Image (tube, rainbow, N blue to C red; front, side, top):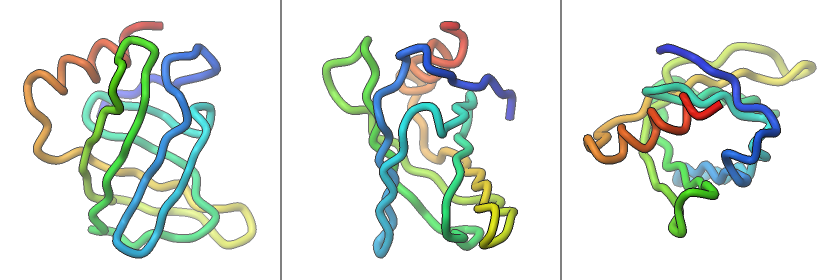
Length: 106
């Protein structure tokens, strides 16, 4: 995955990540958006291969962008927290273009 860190540039509003049993609401500053995935910090480990749904808002869009993906890595510990890497799955060409423009817009 190629990476660009999202800082407080106002590109994303708070993010919502959800599995069947877990829901995380993350500020944009806690997320690293990549062209084909996302990285974020979690207080709890998330097992590899867990499918997740992401809902994110951008100033350029009036609707929430909804993406699905799978956790491909989760490293860390209970004291420092866990860094979770998620790869997007089933991304349409239109959605990929939106992601590319978000990653490249700063």
